[in-house]
Length: 201
Ligand code: GRF
Image 1 (cartoon, rainbow, N blue to C red):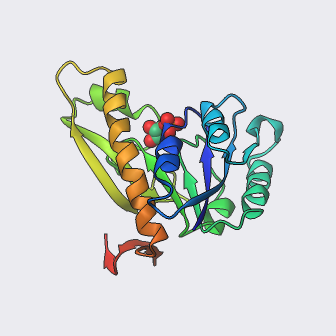
Image 2: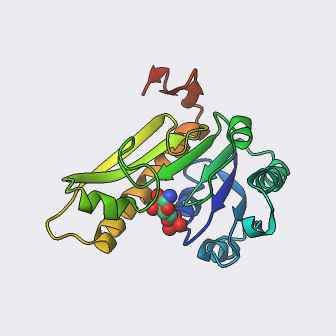
């Protein structure tokens, strides 16, 4: 299957997808970043994957940015659109267009801690558990049906950096696994439900 990966930053999840691409039957057709200095672009270059920079600051509205993004994505006719640390709120027009074929990774146990700064907020809330969620993207920010989660305990005296690093380890394992379910045709979005092997998740 062909996939397009959208990033904004370091791209460590992109790297884990690149490293697993053969095993998960994924051809990464291109990487798109909304930031020119995203380190993930260097990773794409090293892997010989075409890349596009579409800076949101060059557009006067969210709609125009999403339109340009969509035009670039569609040049590759991907089967799957993978958000991997892509830090933009998408218009409902965009999310509807790719509904059922766009996945996102979010560093919290959704529905808890939607939005930004999740690790900090988890520590401040005194949570004993944290983790990562992968979900289908719908109009609601970080609100689409959850496909899979991985939990880790929050350790005593944990700081944001160490917690984020431990969550990232889980992210790198979970995202390729979930993408593989999709490329195998086992994972679908049906009537607002994430379905794996015919069962609602
Ligand atoms: C990850 O924690 C991801 O869950 C979140 O942004 C971070 C991106 O990290 N959406 P990277 O760019 O993949 O290294």
